[in-house]
Length: 307
Image 1: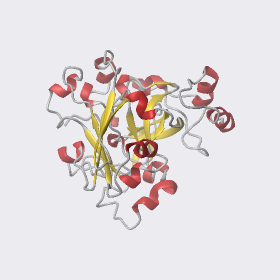
Image 2 (image 1 turned 90 degrees about the horizontal axis):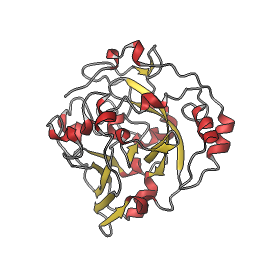
Image 3 (image 1 turned 60 degrees about the horizontal axis):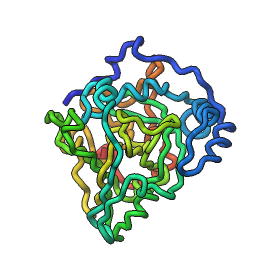
Image 4 (image 1 turned 180 degrees about the horizontal axis):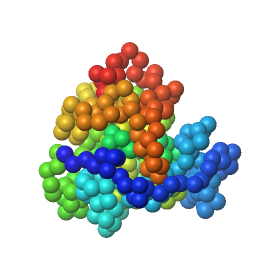
């Protein structure tokens, strides 16, 4: 397994962000958006002055950093490889199949899957298990809205997300660094939480190939590896699915992957993180700072064991 730790970053590789919070303007502009709208320069400027969730003063990660420092092993294991290797990746047409415990298996064209669903603009913290983090403005639809369109059976308890398997288009899949295709999954109540998004864009633009175009999962209270990219399949089941990193290294990557600073990775601490664009490390927050919204999902669980 090839992982570059955040400690390997040189100060010359990261550029400080100098924008500040303007929450009122952000709320006004974001609230006016509708499905299919394109963010205007003024709206994007307002977004770029926001930080984290309302009430925080965190700064956005530079777009250039968020789109060039990526974990997307289908296009290479080094952080700078996906941007180069995915530049000619074609995402149109694109279909997503729905199967498993559903009323009727379906195949959706990408546009049909999200058609008519409310477009969300969310600025979320993104925390990687490798101890680096970003603050990114995402655009997408709530996972729960897509799930409702899939008509799962009442007995379904989990939803599995699968990435495209195509070594001719994804050169990283020609290597056995991971078991392909990449799969991730959520408990259904997690997936139905309003913070969980299926992302189609970032920084007011369509989602770049290297960031998971055309459809990526974002679950902000979990480590980034839970966010499957270039999704082509949703499968509903009543048993906990196998997931790629949990299968590849179960002692290092648990199924739940909730951000928990008290549970160290076997090879480094998770107590602190380095925000890309900043030099000094900062304390890692429980549930990545979203505990007030999501902690009730795990009531009664030992989160040191269910990591």
